Image (cartoon, rainbow over all chains, first blue to last red; front, side):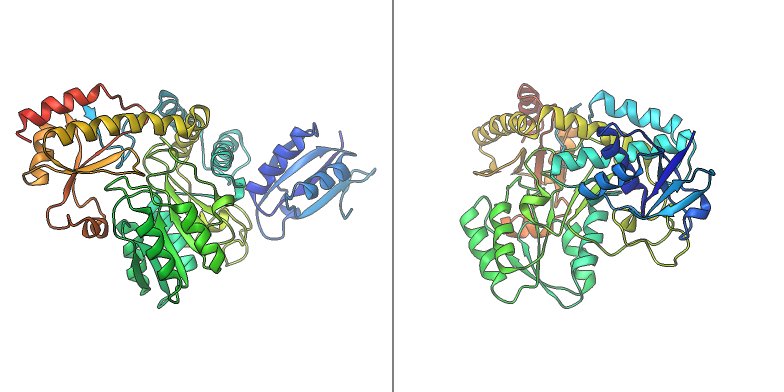
Length: 84
Length: 366
């Protein structure tokens, strides 16, 4: 299974993002951010099924939920930071 | 016991509040720190609490800072907004939770409006004080001693029109009267979790329009590397491990208030108030009552107020006497020397309880 990730500046924004995405039927899981993704130390992110990242990011932006970074899984299985 | 001290705390809670607090003690770890189930459950309670508060008070979850008390929230708010020497308008009915932080900061306070239950006096004095060089205002929604509901919508409008930032102390109104961060346009609104919101003691909320300055510095669970506190609310103002059992209970208290509606709770309290004022008046006691009154009333018992409260306590009636941590309000009402006996009603108070109070007053010689 391939997953994409959205990282947030705070757990509260991550939870608000989770609510927004779930209400739009975009399945996601709140979890701790992998250490290498978070240069500030610790944080929370949302893990999504692949190919939903663009829709999710657009929705979060529209709903005013700030996020930090987007990571997309490549065909080779690597996670790469992307901007949409 | 007949509990008539809801102004101090809602000693009774809806059963789901006790259940949630107990369950959280058994099942929740520290929120915002770990990724395992018990930590995530704790974090879910915290977020549910913010969401419920957001629905009740018209704000976003991240604008809801969870504090340990209303006093804690007021201290954050005052330290964020007021600088030493600033000219700050306060009402004549403020609690020490407002008066003391302002004094400690070295703010120049101007007391405006000292006549009980008189909106015209309150507003005229308040507007006049704002126009005399005020830089900020801090005022209570409801006097904790007398139940006087201040005209906060008009006071807020007066501040907004003049571009003067203000803080609202909603200690006695949250959960009972409409309180909207968005409509009022306050910089901060502080409230306890354990009074009208029916949560456990050790909880409070601070609603923030923008950012604020931390009162405590430390870990927040996220963005750990910088030496500075995070910029984002609510974490910026929430250093340290949170009181999750309290927050879980508060969430269920908020849920109860949302389902029932503050206006219904207010109606019930007001029915008790009206009957109580009438009964006390018939006994020839000096009762402080008037229009714009919430479910709190003070009276002079014709003897030392603490002695009167003790005599009532001996008969199973719980009331509070003295100055109620609000000497300024007592000065405004002319009761600073005597204090008063305060009766305050809550979400489960019933007018029938007043028959017991009446008999207790007779037996106590009041």
